[in-house]
Image (cartoon, rainbow, N blue to C red; front, side, top):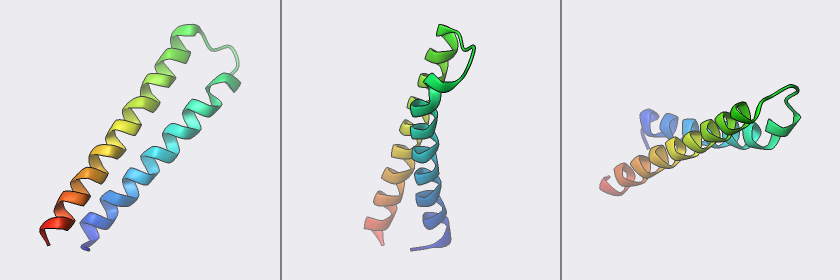
Length: 65
């Protein structure tokens, strides 16, 4: 596994961790509007999609080696 693949794999993990933290703590943000709550949830969802994209690209690159 090359350094680029390892970095992509770890970045995917960081995206998942950040999205889980954002979504689970969104109700604790004080004075947040309903639009802000939806925006935080959407950003968390995008982070999960990015993590999946990174992990899929690592899996396909690893299978070619």
